[in-house]
Image 1 (cartoon, helix red, strand yellow):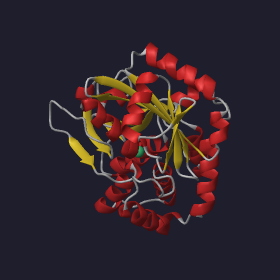
Image 2 (cartoon, rainbow, N blue to C red; image 1 turned 45 degrees about the horizontal axis):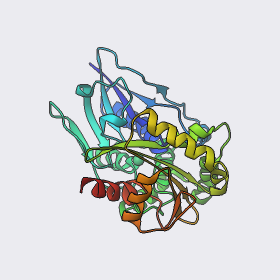
Image 3 (cartoon, rainbow, N blue to C red; image 1 turned 90 degrees about the horizontal axis):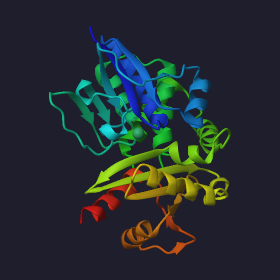
Image 4 (spheres, rainbow, N blue to C red; image 1 turned 60 degrees about the horizontal axis):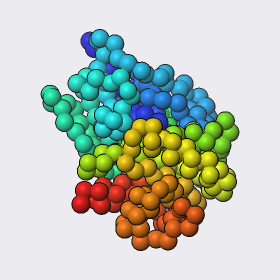
Length: 308
Ligand SMILES: [Mn+2]
């Protein structure tokens, strides 16, 4: 039987790594030979969670062996997958992002607009009657809490809330205490360079005929990031030029106050941001109250504007 590599997107966030681990557990129990991998360096939040739960960090994947197929979790765009991926080898997709999908053969595809891929996997455990260990239930809860910013992001659905409660019947977690620790780890700049700040949660998108990069940094301490703004701006301009992007944006998201400072490196970005968000620009940034989600509050708006 072919071995199935399970992997999330490049610049992996917590949901991406956790979903790979949980999917390995689920699909192994369903009779697949699977192994969870990661498509890049994990962030401080993910490292904290896996350490706390005593779960090993998945290995890095850089290329597939001849007899391997791949299951993509938490993404479906080829441009967000690890660089050496042969997209023809994708057998499954489990995701909660917009689709940009074209395959040569039928594949297994499970995509729903829920708050995290971990939520979808939790549903699949329950649907398939696969027994959840306390550890995997805790892990799935961490994925939901991370991706939905403790159920506050506009991406959060009723289902995420229900699943979290159902999972905690098994996980028995002190959710509030866990979230405080998780957010502290997410906000930590320990061992994080300026390049890391823009790279750690960064994605590129094709919007109309344009290539657009959108990075985000979720934090309870926005001032720790804004203190490095000049260097971050420089790194963003460098990245834009190095990979020939048409636009690059960067969000500093205040998880607690639920707002975002959108960094606008050049005139093009500023003109577009004013057109879409109608906010005021001060020192190359626009304050956006209530905006925390790249997926729901930034990318669709950019895509629509750049398609016209
Ligand atoms: Mn996700």
